Structures are given as C-alpha cells and as structure tokens.
Length: 424
Image 1: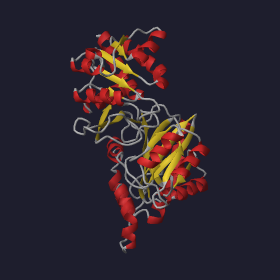
Image 2: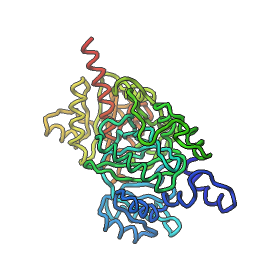
Image 3: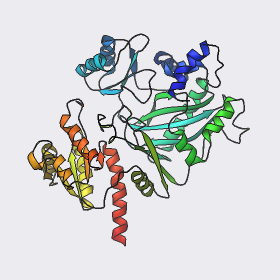
Image 4: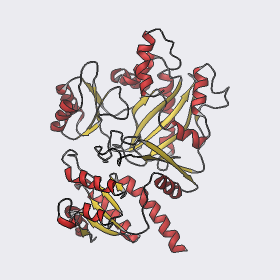
C-alpha cells in the first residue's frame, strides 16, 4: 500500500495482525528522522544535512546551523503536505506558527535545500537481491514535488557513474532497511554527487508508469516476494534492469479549473490529481504526446508573456530568444521587459494587474496570449498579482508554466515541430 498503509502498520501490529513484507520496525527506520539518519550513516550513504525540530526555536536553531535555504516538512505525511522551501528566519518562524503543529510526537524535518537534478527509483527486494526496473529523471529541478514533476525514462543527463551509484545506494538501502517487497527512493544529484532525499518503503505513484515501460508487473512480482518467493525463481536478476530503447515521459495532470482556491504555482507540496504517459522513438515526440495528453497544447505560433522573478531572469532570457526564433511574439511585464531590452531582446511591455485593458488578464480574455511563463522569487507569499495572473490563465485554458524547466521541455517540442515544418 501507500502512505496510509504505512501509517496503519503499527496499530495493526499492536492489535495482533500479522504484517507481511517490510516490518514495522524497519518502516520506522525509513520514516523516523533520527533512525533514518543513523541507517544512512551505517550504510555510508550521503544525504543533505538536516535536523529534527519539535518547536519553533529548535527549527530556527537547526536552520541557522544548516544554512538557508532550507526545506521544511512534517514527518509521516503524504504528497509533500505542508512542505516548503524557506529562505530566511522570518519566513521559518511564520511557517512553524501557521503551517504545522510541531510536537515530540509530530516533529518537523529541517533539511538543507540542494538545487540539483532530482531522480527517483522504484525497487523490488526479496531480502537478498534487489531488482531496479529503472531510474526516472525529473525534468523540473529540485524544489517541485515529484508527483508534480515531469519525468523521463530512460534518464537523459545522468552519467554512467551517477547511475551506477544510484543502483549501489538503492541495493544498500533495500538490504540495510530489511525491505521485503517494494520501495521508492528519491535522489538529488549536484556536481556528480548523489544524495538520498528520502526513502519510502512502499509502492509509489510511479509504479504503474515503470511497470508499463519495462514490462515488469511490479505489483505482482512484489506480492510474490512478500509471500515467500525470490527474484531468481521469478526470472529476474539482481541490479538495474536493461534500459528501454524508446523514450517515455510521465506528465502530471492538474484540476485547477475545478479547485478554485488552489494556486497553480508548483512547489514542494503536491498539487497534481493524476498523470499521463507519452512514449515514442524520440524524446521530442514523447514529450509532445505527454503534453497533448495532459491538455497542454501550444500552437506553432502566437504570443508568450514572461513575468519572471529576478533570480530567474537570465535563464528566462534564453527561453525568450528561442521562442522568438520559432516565430513567437514576446510580451513581458515591466521589470522582465527592461531586463530583456538591456540584453538586446525587445519585448512588448504588458501590465500585471489592474492596468485597464493592457494587463495580462485582459490580453488573455482577448485571446492575444498563447502561453504564460511565470516564476516567483523567495517571498512566495507576497505574490497576489501572480496568483491572479495564473488564475486567469487557468480560467481561459491558456498554457501556464511556473517552472522554467517545463517551459524548456515544451520549447524542445515546438522547435522539433518547427524544424519538420521547414524541412517540408
């Protein structure tokens, strides 16, 4: 089962129910912060520096020691609920007072936030050998919840050394945590160093995706292992399964049109309500199918508006130039337009909110905008204009990108389509 099953395991065991598969003590070693840290130390596996806090002052002291930015989250929760990237002490104190109720029974985890490439694996262990069907590389960088990230299999940018390290750490963790059945591990890679973010000794939402693309019936295999068979008897070898020759994309699906009070800005708290898969012989074709299946369609020409936080303007400039190269008109809010102009790219200025008929929502209503790329800075809460802009995009079915990596993936699709059109 998922997180609910893990949370039910201990009371069921105490009630005398036999627990098959990974046992309660080992579930706790993955879920309890202190026990998990000790397990990683014993196995010589690195993780981002972090501490546990049971109150506001402990959280502040932990963050000062680790250094901002930090990733804060409650323990034993599903979907990154109440998880947040915090940049300073003021925001951390606000988080501890309003977002969670920390206590010795419900501690808050404070981790160093590493900006790197995220990936994840689902593994199946029989207690001695560990089958790893595949590594899924996230398209969005660390900071977007794995359930809201697009993912590609096989991985595209991970070196052979990194993949071997991931496979090694996965086996060490599965055996070291006495895992029997399925487990999911999240990794972040920075400067070719692999860190473990978290281990979930359970099935994950990526199991159907990996089962489909590898032809391994993962749930069935894991169930047979839990009931006493081993991988060799089932015809599987230890280690990383051979990669697919095709490209497969997992893309999230959102229900923002039906969930009016949910902001569409992506972050560490999960917001997607489903997912789709795109598969083909090239990465661009697989991306195209995934975007289309998740109702994110961009025409081959039109206008795109950029409203970008200061820390991302330089990266957005490259995207704007590429959009312009394939024939898109570039619009931008005041600060972003000024930055683009100072670097030789002229964008049509457009107001944010309340600028008569010249703001973004009015342009959206008139059908003059085909896509919006909107990022926010570190003060995520002080973004009322951005929230209205994102809401107008959702209401009128205009593709919205709040992560530049997703916009980059869409550009790859548009550029490949543009190339084909020119060739014809």
